[in-house]
Image 1 (cartoon, rainbow, N blue to C red):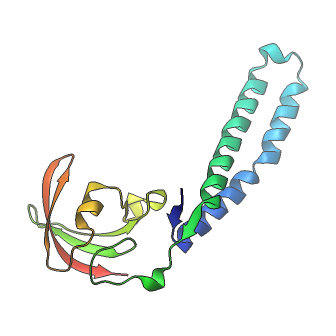
Image 2: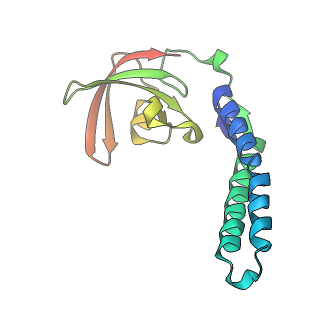
Length: 154
């Protein structure tokens, strides 16, 4: 199954992979030092180092799998006629008049602190396909929300 990423998201995953792979020598060193301390059956340092190695290798494998199946989204084909993946959308909550801006991204790139919400969230799914000026009703875990689409950007 293909994983869709922006170029920025792909570059972040490549950097993360590189950083994780750079940790391998340190973990091998910790295992070697713990092994040198004697009896492995009661060596907590050895067990901890082996567990850390397993977790690291699992993370590396997961990122490599994601990268191998990645498809880069061509943002030159995006438009602002209707809300779609990678659009930056400004919406107004009609209940409290709060205005927020989100960029709708793939699940792998979602980061609410950066204003990036996953296309799989109820809000993003509800907004998809709507135009500026549309009133959108979204069923969310907190109940029904009503938004007005203020702006759509790339």
